[in-house]
Image (cartoon, rainbow, N blue to C red; front, side, top):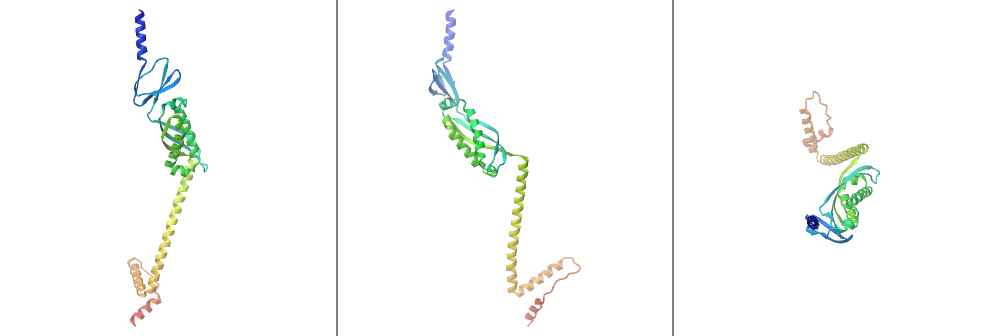
Length: 246
């Protein structure tokens, strides 16, 4: 009877010593409470009651940052959400240096997001999103290095405005389009006036050209279905004919 009890206990003890870790897993081993080494992947041996194992995954973690209320430098209130990609590069630091690396990265990401975006105006948030992503990623990576965490990518997902700001931005865009239209129209008028001045100078130097232009204008008017046409007849036109006849 004693053997029937002892043998199963020994077998359970032996089997509990062996653990299999996947390729993306590592085991942080503590011996009597003191850090010993990092093991894995594959088959590892742990002495029960003397050694303890804490598993750590090395795969990239995708963490969503909840919406944060941010006030930009030009005093515009916006709601911003983002996503952070990070992974463990040092399992020992990730377990020993911080109690919960996931919560630590989450809280640090939220505060950094508000701090960085609060230093920029709304136009910069909307137009320079790639630059802001890189800046936030750099700050997070520097802060989390001591935890054995590598922040690889930070992406701002959405920047939401309230309805009042949306209407104000729409009015601003409409005013900008009207300003550009007026500038283009004025530039066209300037170019046309320059061309008309050049044409007038050429016609003034060549009286025959002025006569041809006058006759062409009469021809264009005659094509229209008008019952009565009143057209000024310049005296200089007759003088030109007199000079030609003489």
